[in-house]
Structure formats: C-alpha cells, structure tokens
Figure 1: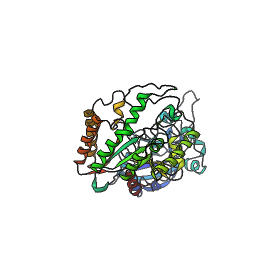
Figure 2: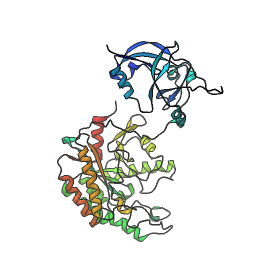
Figure 3: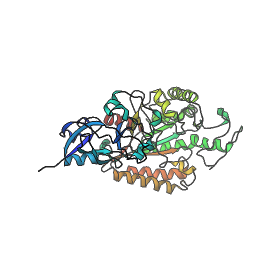
Figure 4: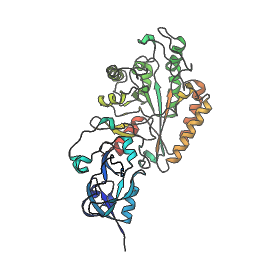
Length: 441
C-alpha cells in the first residue's frame, strides 16, 4: 500500500509553485492553521515565508507564539522526498502541531538565521497571503546586494557555435594617453600597471620614465599585438579609453579595419572610487561621445576597471550598452536587473591577465604566463565536454606588447588554435549569443 505524508504549507499554494512541477498531483486536503506555538517572518526581504517554533520560556517574558494559517496537502513519499530535497540544508522538515491537535510536517527555519538576517516578523499580518496582499514596501537595508550563489549546480546548458567546448576571448586594453599625468589635468603621475612596481605618484610633476613606459604601448606594443592577432585571424575586443583612442587615430583605424570590437573603457584611465557621481556621470557621457566620434560607432560594451560604487548604476542609467564586464564573478555571462529590462554582465578576468607582470607575486617570466593560461584553458576545455564555459584573457599594449612576453602569448595563441572545439570570438559575439539563447523570460 502506498504511503503518504501530510505537509503544512504556510506560504502560497503548493501546486502553484513553478519550481515544484512534479508536485502538481499532490492532494489538497483543506485549509488549516497551526497551534499557537509559532512565529512567521518574511525571509529574503519578502521573497518567501520563514516559520519557526517558539521555545517555551519558564520565566514568562519570552516571545509568544501565534496560530499561522496555511494549507494542508497529502504527498506520496516520492513527492515528499523531492520537496525536502529542493530546500537548502538550513531549512528542515519537522513535525508541527495543528490547531485541532493533529500533526503534520512543515519546513522550518532556524531562528538564529532569522535573527542574523534581521528578517521582519510578520506574524501580526495573519498569515503569508495577507502579508503579500498588503504590499509592504521592501526595506533596502534588509537586502543583501551581493549574489554569492550564481548558477550553483544548475549551470546553463549553452551550445556555442560549432559545438565549441570553450569560448575564448582576447581583450587588448588600450589605455596609453589616458592615464594619470599633469598634462591631462591630474595632480600627479600614473602609478598603476607599469614596469615600475610600487611606483609613487610624482605630485605636480611629469614622470618621464612612467610616460615613456606608457608610450611604448601605443608606439610599439600595440602594433606587435595587432600583427600577432591579424596574422592568425583571431578576433579581439579592445577596451578603449576614449582619451587614449583620440590621441592615436592610426591605431583606431587599424582596429576598425581588422573588424575588432572596440568597447568603452571609460573616458580616462584613472581610479574612480573617490570621484563624485555627477563627475563620473559626465565622464561616462563624454567617453561615449568621443568614442563614437573617433571610431564611427557608439560602444556596445563597457568595462571601466577601476570602478566606483556608482559605476554599474550609471551604466544601467545610460541604457545604451548591450553588456558590461565590470565583474569577475563567473565563468559564464549572467543577467542582473536593469532599469526596465534585464542587463547582461560578461565577466572579465584579473588572473588570465598580463597585469600579473606588474603586480606583486605575479608572473616573472613569459613561461609562467603561458603555463597559467594553458592550464586555465585545459581545465575549461575539459569541463566544456559537458558544460561549455568562457575564457577571457586580458592584455595590455605596454605589457604583453614587450617582445619577451609577446613570445609567450604567441605560443598560447598557437596552442589554442591547435584545438578544434574552440570558439574564438569577440565579447559582443558572446553577448549576442546570450541574448539569443538565454534571455530571461
């Protein structure tokens, strides 16, 4: 004889849950409510209910339990096992008391976590349905803004062109001529990503060494990288600083002629963390205008790099970008909420990046760079047999454009091209693929 389990649901109807499609045949018994032994909270800022049992207090000064309304269902054991398996480990099935003295199973939440998250007590609303009907405004302070879960175990089953196991995307950062320099109105010289590790800013003075290191990137390094990629027919996305692009029209012409994507890297190659929001907004608008003027088209991709806490919001506010890459959070693109539509984030990389040549404990030889890139590629290529992934590689004209490092990069380019199931693409290609096949419904 088939066995069944009675389950009390204090939220919305079990059969109405889209994640519980195999529970559609669960048997609805009746409306019910618990004995006055429980409290109800709005978990995840109103996303779902959280119920816990009030512990008895011999002193008589503790919280008081109430009766919580809900629905009673009958599930066969397969359905019950599935229901329990869909809950995270900290939510657990327990026997609860109903108002008529009967018992049922409910999914309870540990009170310690409810207290830690500071989820509001909504017991006085008379149940979850009444709480939702009241349209209580969300408290922004209770929303944890970071997504630490991502895709989890449910990786999207994408299919890249030609059944590729991995989408490999090379970025050339074009920043030379837009860095910190008193000629650009800055208070001092650049300190970041050069051959001078730990460089100090020369306040109120030009720094000839730093300036010439950057100049190598635009004068020589860029053209070496340009030859390497065009001779192999490998597509590139350029992260172009607007001020830098406008100072070297010959390089921009070469980028366009090679059919490279030129994404916006912002107006200036500076740190934005202490720049006020109005200035950053004006810099974003200026970056787009200059970029459009010098390349002939507005940028569809955006990566600032040295962001402020306002950068993403300003990108969403501007509204004209297909994607941004100011994230390092995943091996695949992902969607976030935009102003009035989903916004695509294509994560970038700081590890598969030649910036390691200019940072402490980074790469000290081309062999180390090649070895790290190869190991990253091999891992993703193997994983891509079942779940294709994306590999970004970040390059800088003044770093990888140096001969010794360019030799290591050339070995890696040839290594990647020796594999069949690889999609060599631009970031905008990945964006278009994700819009076509994974746009949220």
